Image 1: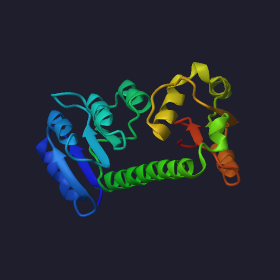
Image 2: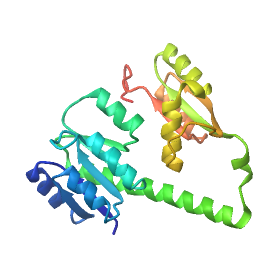
Image 3: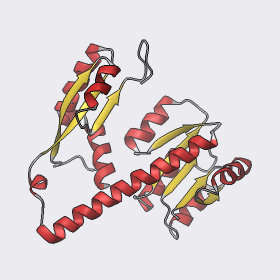
Image 4: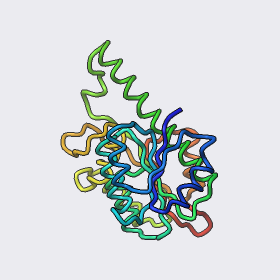
Length: 232
């Protein structure tokens, strides 16, 4: 069973979380992010879940340091404080996989950890397959040219769609997104000399977008959060 690490400075919260998910996962807990970073030097973890507000260091900083030690660990953050700037940095800059609001519902935490484990396994399996291919046949042809990824944009704001389309099709001005994708697939953070670009489709209606996705594969979906009659 893959090991999960929970980090929160409130011991009562840790005890409740551990008790709630211990039957489903192999769980360790730590009330100190500094001690957790020390533990990461000794033991590999598949998923680490951290609170945001902690006295020794905030959760984003902790998870950034943790990721430097264990880049294959999927990182999740908990917070009861709706700080949008923090969340944007956590996801776009530090490549934290998922945000969970506090107080957390245990079923949501279990689902998020399960999804994180599936995501990690998919990334590791793709890496293994790519390495096996290179060992047998050398660099595959698609690695020698420019890869095309299909992105789907969904927003009721036509101006926003136009701006995003321009940004995605002119990658040099949108390094944050490219960096996030590159980090997720290769664990490299450099934006230089990447060999991929986007083919972009856009929809103002989420229903039309869902219909489109029934017959078209997409690598990336960017959706507006709010719609007149639909939640993104």
